[in-house]
Image 1 (cartoon, rainbow, N blue to C red):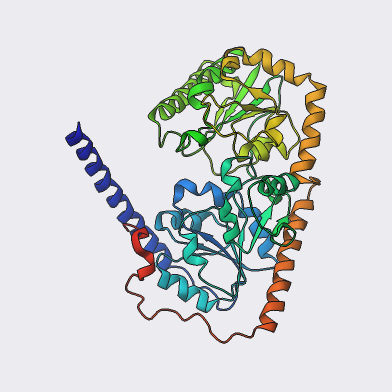
Image 2 (image 1 turned 45 degrees about the vertical axis):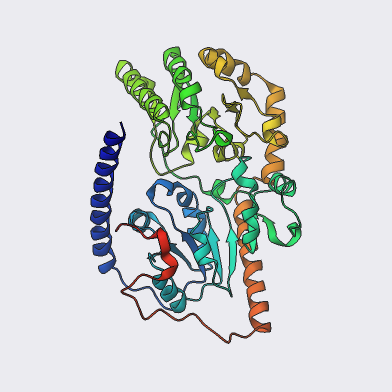
Length: 433
């Protein structure tokens, strides 16, 4: 068994290296044809050290960043070659590929970066945070009550942009000696002002159900995924009803840790394809596209796992159910929305049609939902969150001017003269590209 495993790992390594080198060649060709970035132009950077598997964390910020760039020029700093390729194609704001610390230093020396946004907690964020004279701001990639949202790592950033009162309460339970009034700034959810994508779904008598599960997690306390426990039976029952249209949008990491989740995911995808073959008018959708937003607005009811998708949907104020993790080790915040949400237990999935019928006519559930929307996001009228986002950025720009005036620059970042070598700071994070 050990030899077979080593052989499989060896083949995988060769495959990964080959794909990585191919991606590097494509990236080099793409970079060679681009115009150089204008000097001293960009005031805001978005630091992204991940590859394509986590690109969803950036995608939801594309349109808010594009709108912000109309006032403050924004530049994405990509540290990963495989991630930089799609970013260059997709991002509405310019992208700089800064694989090495020397590359990062060069871009910082050439630009006037005053605010750096971070959408996740990648360990390589620390390489960027070494630089002073700019505000390091955690903006995250969603609002949720997952354990990820209450990490003490938030203290490492100068500021955090949070959604609303619920986020402050959540952090207040775990952070000691943190200046919430200064460092945690409420902005709502500006992404909700820019829901993206279109669908060919034509309204008819079918009830549209969005099932958007998260991945299985990498430890028991984060085992929120429902694909293997709820998903197969749930989707099968909805496909068989003849009254529902399913939009199935699984997390892109589904099955990366547990092969059972990968197999269940494939089973659901195959069942959707078979249902559409039997009845093309059913219009069931397996959605793996980069655009997120149309699914939330098109669905009459959403069924999601404990993840940011709960709160993406909550911001719409429309009917919502949350799958209850089957693993008792999964950590659940019982003080926020999850203390009052409509739970879907794995034993209910076979009877999902009756469950959804009951929810559709539950006025009390709708009233509770409205209260929680206000607590998590504040005013959700169109454009309000975007305005709060821009006001928060303007505040930090004003603070930057104040500190810069009081502390004139006596040093500056110099671009490394060793552009052909790797900086020692890169350490074990060097890519095989």
